[in-house]
Amino acid sequence: MAQVFYFFIFPGLLFASVAGGFLSWFDRKLTARLQFRVGPPMLQPFYDFVKLLAKETIVSSEAAKSLFLMAPVFAVTGACLSCVLIFIPVFGIGNGFQGDLIVIFYLMMVPTISYIIGALASGNPLSNLGASREIKLLIGYEFSMLLVLAAIILKAGNTVSIHDIILLQQQEGAFIGSLSGVLLFIPLMMCVQAKLAFVPFDLADAETEIAGGIFLEFSGLTLALAKLAKYIMMLVLPSFVIVVLLGGFRLDGIHILWSLLKLIGLVLLITLVRNTNPRLTVGQSLRFFFIWMNLIAVVAILLAYAGL
Amino acid sequence: MGLTDYCFKKSLWLFHFAGASCNNCDIELLDCLTPRYDVERFGMVLVGSVRHADVLVVSGSINQKCRSRLLTIYEQAPKPLLVIAVGACGCTGGIFAEGNTFAGPVDSIIPVDLYIPGCPPKPEAFLAGIVKLLNK
Image 1 (cartoon, rainbow over the protein chains, first blue to last red):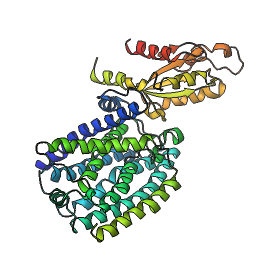
Image 2 (cartoon, rainbow over the protein chains, first blue to last red):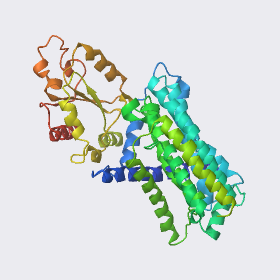
Image 3 (cartoon, rainbow over the protein chains, first blue to last red):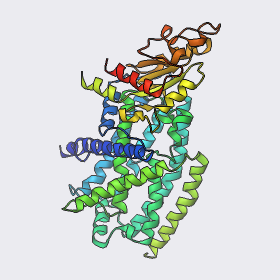
Image 4 (cartoon, chains in turn blue, green):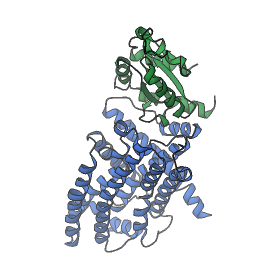
């Protein structure tokens, strides 16, 4: 019973979609303010979601029907599971288990892979183009992210448990306080940007170029679930960065405010990067991750090995 | 008014179909997205795929070549769908109404919910039209 509650209510589906919806609104509102616009009302993600639920769901005659309809469900499930596994140690509900860092790393990949599967099953050439771009981007940033995680595991004294990593940071100061921590922050934030498919890495769902790319064929219910998975990832990915580098959340007294500020601050950073950069092509983004981000991560690993 | 109706009105996603348009209406429509008019505060965004659309905005006169395409686009869109005919050409055919390639104004091809006349209509006219449609 407890597992069902964790998955569906707190800290799973319900909590994650409300918090993620708020963060997604914050991102849109901030984008609007940066462009000197007014921006959408606070309940806009909720309106979008309910409207999409009520709309007709179209499946193309070219599509692999069941795979196409199941892909968004997989996306929401993967996003929810990663949210549960991150927040159970964070909120002190449980201690997690050895190796949950690795499990979360793979679970955070599930939404992206589900979009790719859905797009390939939709039978639309532009969707397939978007999916192929997303696969290439995935190959680029996942390796950088693995290197970053390797450095974090090294810094945490060869532990792969989220709970131990948070505990260590709360005793000895956040990892970002060291030189290697600062270096690791850069590639990790770029990976988050790419995982959220925001500019400059939105080449897979480029609206003006390939008409929505991987999401082109999604409509009604399937699009609603895809949006929901995006809202949840908007909460999960910044929280993951906070847990592994910024000392995690503390939920006593004034620390609640600090934890919220960290989350809002990271979303602010993501939105600023998104609003001040042009879209990169496949080659440019691969070069960016393979050469520069990997270089920074490797230097950080060496520094972490030297104890800096 | 139910919850879904309310949410539908609060989050209209526009898909833009330009027929044989002179692009003037299209430019005026894009003005609605600029900081001065900012339709996103009403929840409206321009989407790239007709599968996401709640509103089909048709501008320009419809000629023999784009008639079948307009029909296809309309059938591809998930319902409920609102259709808006923009500009003199979209509403009646305008100066092209007697041309030999003209295939009829928009409402002779697909059902139209809202007409916004003008050559081109101002962004204010566009917003006023949508408000009238939603309060109907």
